[in-house]
Image (cartoon, rainbow, N blue to C red; front, top):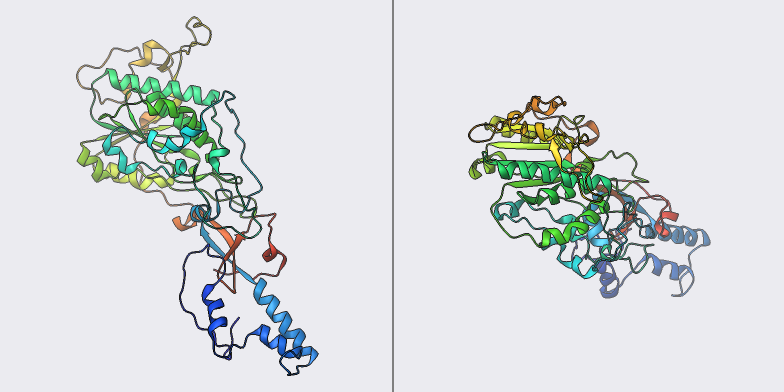
Length: 441
């Protein structure tokens, strides 16, 4: 927008993407000894200062000025940082999220301010690996307003509703069954990593809280068009908040809790918001310092017998360090369907292999117990996870060749001011969308 005749002087630079307007530009116009701007040139053309410019020149100057003010470029920026700056529903502020399985009974919204501390790991060694980003989204207040967005965006703490689904009930029972096995049989120190769909992962951790210290690792915010439906994970955490709030601190084996949808398929910038993220787990050297030589990786079902690519490097490092990594599907735990029906509304106990007779076989498939192994009949259920072997580090898919591609959103940035005008989601709002834009970096 500048030329050699314009006496614009930059007094300072701000790198914050959400600052609307360029104060140094305004200051230069006010303080320059003989400011000559395009608007001054237009005034000259109109005879305001006594000069004369032909009509063609006037039209050209007006057109140039309007183009510069509306022109924008497209840049990819961190989705999470854009949400922190402009609100959780950045780019879709008129939309919201839905909660399948919503609990209709009243709950105290004032307790939401304590969600982050209530779900903090009970074991101190798990605290450095606690990623509470998702929980912190509840009370976040936008720092800036994107063009076209409403003045007030309802914060998530006013939108979220607890959910409880049949899948969560099943995962809770599965987590409880595993924790019961681990707590009743002396075994070598181990780390458990549960990698289920968000709400089920939270429920599994709640059920396992009788013997494991949950370490939640949810590194994104919900969004109305989010490819990761993390608002449901948040709603599940709200449902179980009272349970976690009453747990006492203690040195327990750690349970890393991951959302398996964190790397959900993403294909369309115009209709999807990329709120994906990579998992974070303790490294091999950390486990060695803790004396942990066993890792149990829990997947949703027997069909999921390998880890996602964001865990492959860590798992390869575990194997190289002599740490025994084994895989187990959560559906290895199920009720005994041959047993008489329990009382109405009473939860059925879950067993490894689905029967009390096969429950103890867990320690034969995962021979980490001290002393004599519990007696158990030879089970007749599929256990492909017991044949798992740590692979070489997996190559990232071509669409995700760089981790910097994950969790980014294309935004319109003003060429004139460097201000963020809005997300390039469709349909879009704001005057910047009604002008021709240029694309770039």
